Image 1 (cartoon, rainbow, N blue to C red):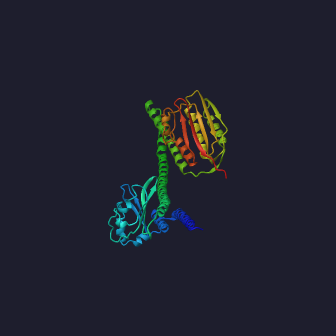
Image 2 (image 1 turned 60 degrees about the horizontal axis):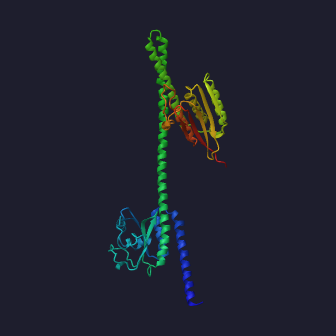
Image 3 (image 1 turned 90 degrees about the horizontal axis):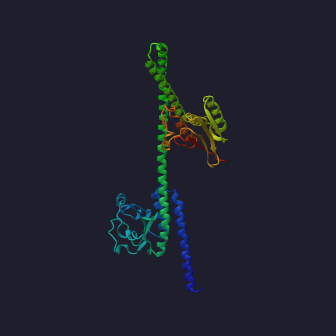
Amino acid sequence: MPEDDFEKRRGEDEQFQRQILLLQAIIRIFRETPDCEDETEVARLGLKIAEELSGSAISFLGELNPEGRFDTTTLSARGWKACRVPRPEAEEMLRNMPARGINRIGLQEGISWIVSDPDSHPAAVEKPPGHPPINSFLGVPLKFMGGITGMIGLANKKGGYTPADQQEMEALSVAFAEALNRRRAEKKIEELNLELQFHLRQLKDANKELEAFSYSVSHDLRAPLRHITGFVELLNKRDAEVLDEKSRHYLQVISESAQKMGMLIDDLLSFSRMGRAEMMRTRVDMNRIVEEIIAQVKAETKGRQIAWEVAPLPAVEGDAAMLRLVMMNYIINALKFTEPIPEAHIEIGAVADRPDETLFYVRDNGVGFDMKYVNKLFGLFQRLHGSDEFEGTGVGLANVRRIIHRHGGRTWAEGEVGGGAAFWFSLPKKEEK
């Protein structure tokens, strides 16, 4: 083989071997950095791999803050070993360090740079006593998300750095930056998860306290309410003949108010219990639930013209008693707000062709509501109509939302003033195994 061909072949072999070593170094970064505890350990591991690949004696990672200073600077293990500055003093010097001297040469242009004789370079600055001597230097900008975030500094390779070293470190720096920022992102996610768990525990405790408070208050209110109702009845029986019309009217108002208060207490207790009740999940026949509810309310709505339109409903997974309460609230709601309508029309149906959830609705041709107030509908004690227009405590729909939320579903409504309303809820479909 001619000598020129031999040299060419040897050069190709060396280049191929370098490419293999570079690929192995990149693989090491992505394989080993996920096991690092924090970003400092990621940085030191990356610097170690860079030193081994380039033949450098020492190295550092400097990251820039918004003011352009090296706010985060990590020395490699070899770098700390070669450093003669006391560790606490050195760590203090590395904080918010100016980007000066040969360290900043390529940062503004965003290109890597080689300095063969650092001490005689025009940009060189005086080093602090104990700083390791530098006889050759390779700087590589650290790039992420389209910007320069810092640099990797490698020093003291025997014989100095070559363009091939420069290209390899540029390729390695991409993996380095990716691994470093990935670990930071993971740490941020971990911190956010811990914070979220903390807030969830706080919310859970607050809900328990609120439910206990509402139950206690509701329970304790029953006794004085019974006294009010009882004494009003005694007055009516005892002094009805001697009381004038206005006095009897006052007693009637007191009695009616006490009855409304009793209903509110009952609803509040029901709302409180619904948040604590254990769910008994079974296969629920929604058709049967709706049939039973309609049969029950028909006896209470005799004399009214009501057209019922009930479509076949799919069976679902859930708590039968809770879902019955949901349907009861929706149907009672429809009956209540169609009462002023001479011929009421109530439609009950479902949308079952969605891949992940089943939708149910109760639609009526009643008085409707203004959509700008739709966010109030499912709030506790929220009412869009006065109590003199339609009776109610403002708890029923709040209970519906709590039940459906516990089932993993959604609740919403659509309406128009004078144009009726449709109340919806969704239930997630059970995954097939």
